[in-house]
Length: 499
Ligand SMILES: [Zn+2]
Image (cartoon, rainbow, N blue to C red):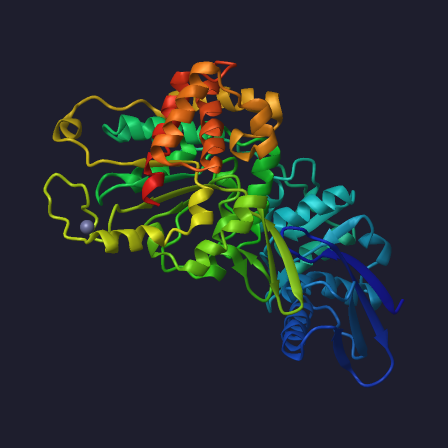
């Protein structure tokens, strides 16, 4: 046998398309080519594969070795193919039986001594291998993550020798069984935050309907403390959502920790972050902050300090829940359905409206500062609220606030109502759906028309108020939107006039 093929997987976005690794041994001067990879990568792969084979006392054939990775156009993070290439060489040179390779896929980087090193995207690969009906042989350290794909047959190995012993049916690899029970995710709790009842109520409404929020208040009022507790009051992740979250994180630089299964992500990039860091990119495109926040919370503190380009880049995902990244010839799409929670000071110094009167910002400076949140972005934020400095009495009060679990129970119930009625959260309702599903009763409608005229709000704002009022009514278990629901929803638009 001088040709062998081994099944493996590349990584494209969060998908793991199949790659066939073909190894040919031909006559001629000893050489080692990998078709379609740059020379430096070929050299490194060759050095690792050759050293690993030698170290394990296999023969590295003194022939002309050609490795072909098909299809050719896929992005190739090449070190993951070390193991399949080594096995292909062993099979093509008759040191391993080719039939033994059937029904299995392989991925793993080799150390010079033949140990298997972890690869990126193990979960994505395991999901695809499962769909293809094959077992997946991979580095042992990747197994806990890969095993999150329920029903996938994961065969972890520590070394090349273990894999060869498995293929020779001497010592079969043992299928990975996850012994650790899944625990409920742990979030910081709302009961730690004293006072701020109105803000907490607004966040409950935001969580229930999936509405984006902007908190405006002076420094030190607990805006970030509230934001990082927000994931804990969101509805629990469904199995499919948890898998998506894990798959995205598994292809990121930091990777995914199996222990964080089921947790809603919370991402808080600094305002100095570049557009690329936020939306993703790179030669082998990787997810950015907005995709790492998929099904979770993206917290942007000091919103006006972010670059205009960065804020602009948020428009596509806020609309579609996805982001397309193209770089040179490569294109990748990542999901990015996050809930935006933003915060800012009321003015550049932060003390506008403060009882101490220490703010010296001119009205022009304040207007310019607020104007940095561009119309379209400000427009997509359903709830804007003021976060006042807490009163002394609130800070020293011994009573703890309500725990996140109680708030989450109400949020889950309201969200269920929405999913049963329209199959999506209220924040995603389009214009015509609002007309159909968010009609207010007579008193409510009258109140809304008066308020809009008084606050000089636009027709779009009218729709937004109704959408939030729908959520407030859902929280109250009311099928019709009444005046009290409209009244609360209008509170969340009062700041509109200053943006
Ligand atoms: Zn000021």
